[in-house]
Length: 207
Length: 343
Image (cartoon, rainbow over all chains, first blue to last red; front, side, top):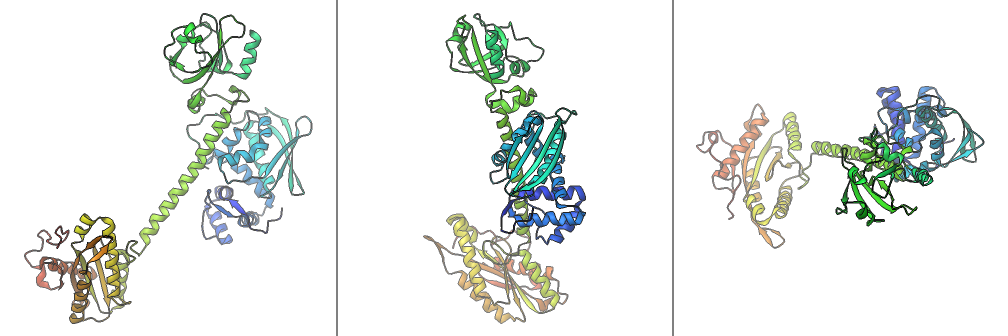
């Protein structure tokens, strides 16, 4: 997806997640270097504030060029990091509330934007729609801003499948009329043990 | 009846069924999970659960009297988890009853204590959504709390670095220290005045802090008006001010300035219905008396001179002189600092 040219707000939680992904994966000096390259007048995104979305796309591009990777790969890595980062359990846990099994979870994705809004009122995620194409064959349609979210979702789904112990095949099938399509094949629902998930937690981890 | 239990196991997994004598003859799967290794079936309901509201229930007949009402109960053994319930007479007309239970507000603890999973709740039950919400809100609240902490920290840091006294808009002690260091470095001549308000404590005590604050602001205004733009005026304590007069100054001019300052400060300051009367005592030092330009010593001496003014009866100024150091009252209780009398 091309970056949006008009000014739009991006939730700080998203920028913060991207920042944490880069800093925790490639180190604080790499992040400091990026801050300089982006000419930011701050060093940390505040998760509860809003930012101009153009900055988010610039940040992703700067990461892609610093790492010598495609922007799509960077986005996917961000998604995986969101779920697997041991320092912030909240996203994984909150997504696990969506379903008892990976299949339940897939079906809960339609509700994800509403769930996100329940948690953080001004966090707007793209609309998601899961379609079933026969046994264990699905597609997830992701439409709306921010563009590129489909790639983040691929990373998220990959990590969540792992979390549930499910074996899946995932592929970003491109964008049609502004809607990103992810093909999902559920090969085996209970392939591995998965990570345990207790509903009750003494205290939720910060994000 | 078995069919009914099968149905209820899915719809109300925390139900139990009582026979006509008040003994448990079926327990829903989630309720059974709360007491693993224990067989509730066959036990008398009122011996397993304590009915907390209504309290008067002693037997099955009493219990049936509260059909369709809200019941508050808890386990008699530990963990004594609180439960809500409702009883309906069994549809077979055999005198038995079905009681459906839920955790009510203790659900967050209960889910943790009993390690319950989504499979333990009916698909229509909103418990999972509620747990999600509790956890999501805690996470969001935590993020907000951290933001507030950071902002608070930034505010404190900014205040610590600030050079302005927020009440009066004058420079503060920190700023004055910087200015003093600079003039010493530049080598120019200057005079230092340490000014302490007289009777200010009485204003604060009798007219209130708002009046006191107003007086301080008026004092600040007068001090700024009576000095030149090159001079520096700072509030360095509650009712203490320090004035630095740049460039060459002589005693006569400083006499004039002190006289004018005290005269203006003694004019009543009106705040609402109150008329506040104060004055000022001043101690003065001049840089030419300090060949080594020891700024700490200069400030100390200005304070001694101020002290002498207080001792002389306040509302006056004194130039520092070595003889003041040897005066008998040095080291005695300060006569004028923290006045209590109102003129």
